[in-house]
Image (cartoon, rainbow, N blue to C red):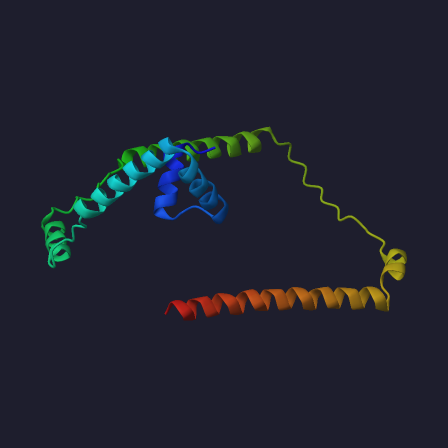
Length: 164
């Protein structure tokens, strides 16, 4: 619950709802200490309103600030230079490693050049798979994939045209 000063400040500023307003007005009529505190806060509020003036910057404030900003020395870009020897050393290490792996694989391989092609008998298996429904589903899926690709391709072209 808010203390008395907070209640009175919200009442003076007009930030309280109707129920709180009625409660504070009832307290003001019955409680003398509350009424005295209310009058003190009213005096403070009046003094604050009389002595506080809003300071406005001069007409050329923005221009003066921008002139000062333009006079500042622009920061120099940080230029880091990577030593090319480091790059060559890393590349050389990986090249030597890959070459060593290749030499090891060739040295330990047993040369067996007998190549036989496997024979697959698909005659009996394809009869059950190839029917009009399967072919229709295959064509439909390919058409959907083609449309998705076409949409992506056109959107990419529209984005490039929009940027220009």
